[in-house]
Amino acid sequence: DGVRRRPPPHRGPRGLQGAALCLYPLGQKTSKCGDRADSKQFGELFGDPVMIARLPAADTTLNPTADKEISIYYSSATVTVLGSLYDDDTWDGRIVRIRLRTTDQDYTLGTSILAGMTRDDLLMLYPFADQTDYVLETTIDEQRYEMTFTFADDAARTITGVKLEMTG
Image 1 (tube, rainbow, N blue to C red):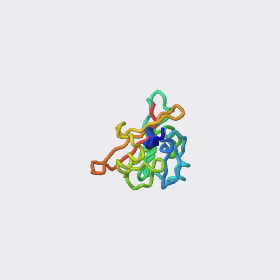
Image 2 (cartoon, rainbow, N blue to C red):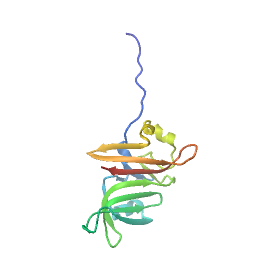
Image 3 (spheres, rainbow, N blue to C red):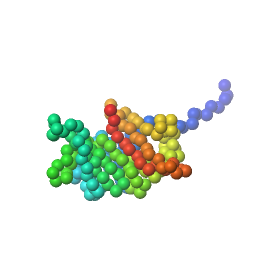
Image 4 (spheres, rainbow, N blue to C red):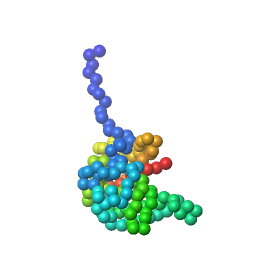
């Protein structure tokens, strides 16, 4: 018909992209939410943690050997694994949650999601995030992952925290 049609504008992804499931300290891809990890591996990657905390993930009175939620705190990120914590403070388990909680930019999820970015920066990556109340999710190999954000009450709506976790 002689009419030139423009392709639809690129609108970006609606759901969480697989690369965003990986923790990048100082720009280097290391661990993915859902992967197995241990204290030796994390010591080599991140150095000594600031603190290690253990919470029961199930009723351990009836099952004392049940896996525990173990949170490993670093300067600006916390990684939580479901696994075993031993008497010498070594641990192993499956990564179930990653939190970025300060804006020093040492850690990112994927190559571009970090605490300290603005809401507008996030919307450039995920243009529909505002339509999902800033909850991004994806399902990979029948496992659901969810990323949520907390924002400062400033003009730029700076992201003050990012939480990625396995759900369901």
